[in-house]
Image (cartoon, rainbow, N blue to C red; front, top):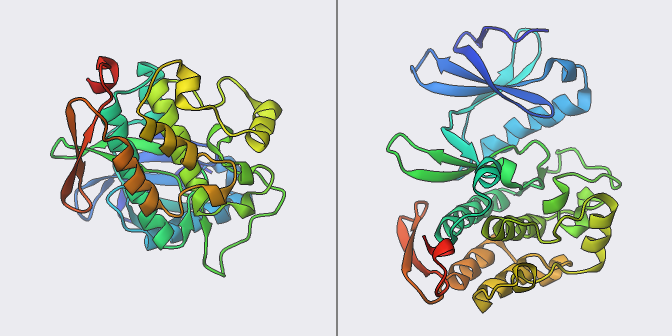
Length: 310
């Protein structure tokens, strides 16, 4: 089943720009407005997989409930004439955090501060709407550049998100969902248990990687990584890098990535406040724009480190 050229007599597909586990993304023109958009379609091989199609359609329903400048916006959703689900999303320009880190290795503290700040603002909106992402990772964090040239972080892919809606399908108890290096320990083998604090664990892991260029548990993979996550808290950022970081930053990461959810921040709001405080150290002032609240927060970098303060 090939992708139709025009969706809903409105969205004209122009070329495929991405492909994921169950969907592919096309650049398209919205004929009604003249705007460039992105159309996400179920991959043809998955069109007969009921569970995958159901997840795809659920993503559209969740995005309809979620309004945040830091989440890729849903424009339309429905089914093609062939019964293939589709989502029409805002067209993003830029690259994922995963792509940036693959090229750069790590980022300056002011860059990481902005990205993490905006991820947490997105999570505040998502959790308020009863939505837990469950798959936060650098591949689902997009660094978008708007029409005015200003950068902004956008969360992607709510395909395996968990909803508080009683009508939402329940995840099987023996299922592990999400990217293992960023998944909270309680998600391992039981993704149905993942609550909002699982997302906060992932934010901690993303910040750790973006600042240091390495994952909290180093090169551990598979069963070894699962065992480490279940039995040990991750090493401190000082231990992992052999460098001295601001103590408040180390405390933020330790609390965000605590093994048990009860030891983590109680909410995304609390984590955001702690992040902003943790990144106020000594050194040159760093101004982090807060677009959602139309305010600014001043943060400082660690002393004597031009790499992280550039």
